[in-house]
Image (cartoon, rainbow over the protein chains, first blue to last red):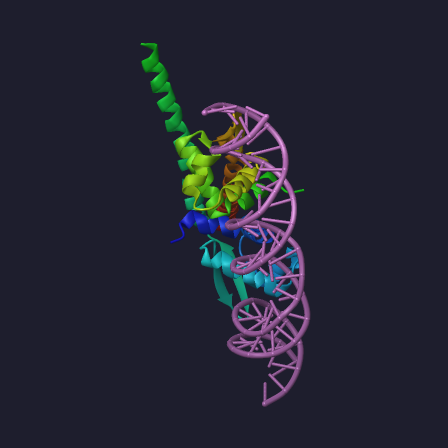
Length: 107
Length: 107
DNA sequence: TACACCAATAACCGACGAGTTATGTGTGAG
DNA sequence: CTCACACATAACTCGTCGGTTATTGGTGTA
């Protein structure tokens, strides 16, 4: 039962794969060929990365003739944001607890 | 030349390691022993994870007698937040570009 | 001083994953 | 129909990394 943010962290941990995703975010819709051209790895490697990104929900594919276009699904990053703010929230509440404690000690 | 967010993604990609960090965020300062007790792995494994987290700047250690306390450094998550909002920003600007284009086409 | 305890390091092992080359599948072009 | 192209899949290699046990270093305790 992998949590959503778990998949995101694992998917985005690889630099090559993350670079592909960043490219899709920056420049929008891209063919596999275009992505391969700047990825620095072979076409099958790129296809595999795209497969992983797709399974993580981070990209969508669109078939057009004999080429496949991929585009970033930015909404998929939500669990990452949630996780981060949750961590921040924990920190906040612990700080509040400390504050409360200090306040009570003061009285 | 690994970017700061690269180290974060790689560091937080491992579930066990991330669980340790989450624990430190939730419950604050913890000894290695306490962390080991709930980690589900051996003490050396936990120490190794803490070493990685420390090198990533995500935790700090504090020696107290013969035990070592670790605590989360929440500020270290900043590059992660930056990266995320940067991706969102790319998306926004592409959307704006499209909007501009449509506006110009409309005229 | 001797001993127990806590954490870190060493040395090793197995699995997973990112990369490769080779091949398969489908689609437009000639 | 045939061929070339775009992409996906297969099969394999190899490095990395998370795990283990064994050991060392350092600190409180009897």
